Image 1 (cartoon, rainbow over the protein chains, first blue to last red):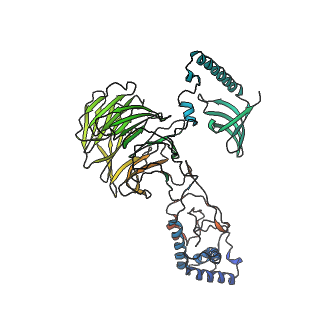
Image 2 (tube, each protein chain N blue to C red):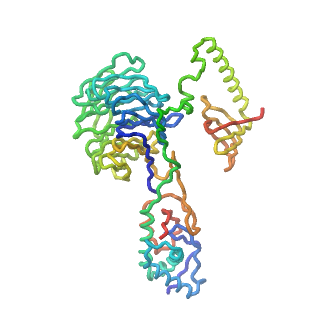
Image 3 (tube, chains in turn cyan, orange):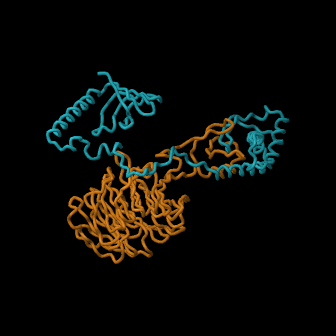
Length: 217
Length: 348
């Protein structure tokens, strides 16, 4: 048997996993002989059909055996064929891409959910007073809306540069320094966003993901 | 990894036309025209149903969305084209024609609608003056299958059974016409690069939208009903009578992939505006969404890294083609230290 030296930490290319291969001088010749014998019997093994723990154990040991066999040159073709058979099976049986769920189908109604964000923003006016079409009521309601919007915009101004805590979906709670909002209040620009992965210097938060936010005046 | 198409059900008859909107602050949308007369609006990246446009009394042959999906238009066998509100699903306009309407297209500003159908006439409707008569362009000698605005809405492209014609919008005159070997099954206009993609027989052809000259063409293994070019012009997808979807490299014409999945001939294929997925509509009444980059996390697809048995290291999911065969030759040489990523092993 050829004495072959292995480096440490050689990669088994077949499986992609890293083995720390012991230099041959550490192994007694009897151990090597045993492993070669196992390799020899495994090469003729019906790879495609067996799946018991015994064969899996044999498979694991054969992976280790490959190196000694392949390097020595003797008896390498049988193990190569076995490996090829195993690899072909791996490449033809590709795993399908996982999906979170199937697309939602129609529910029997005509759809166009009025509570969807798009409908709320772009849909027909939600002014309740339009139903009565009373101009005086319309005027009052509009004034009320103006006052509320003005207050909200001032609150956004007051928030700039301050630390704000955002409560978001999926039990996410993050703190950041508020920068600015876009014109439609769809995105918030923040700095120093404290995430579980670290502090993000600059970030854009999608408003549809935010449930609530709070800050100290 | 193996492609997992997302099947969108809901239609009860063949799906004959699909159109995506542009990218809006709410994502992008997809409308499907179906012979059951009920076109549906779906969220473009997930395929989730949003609503059904109810009102047509015949098979819907063509459907389109304006850029921000606030308006939809449909062409039907009940001799009408209808314009719908894309938010509420309400019918806004009904435009009467003299025969089956096959194709509808909005201008970029959504002010005009182009229609074409079996009456061999192109009509341009001013959507701000719907009671006014449309401008009519005649010249086709057989039923119009597809009519599209081109060249920044200054020209019109129309395809019928045997010809593809280019018209000037302001003078309503024919600028150019080409004869096509077989009946045109579909036409797609690509503004960036002024290209049109035409399919006829088993051919997928690319022509200039300005001169109508052919740039290149590919032959597919089966009769192709529709083809679509990726927004970055890297690849194209086509589907037809053999129920399969083919993916080709645009530059070399090499067939990259083919996917089985539909249970009937594919009538329409379209790439999404971001190029991440393409959708196919089939005789089997379903729409399927397919990933352009298989395995990428997008929409409802999720990239999952499986855990190996026996405590081996978790491998990255990058699927490097060719590593399977190459490894066998390299088995003898143990000197290289490169880590090869492979598909997960199947335990024998």
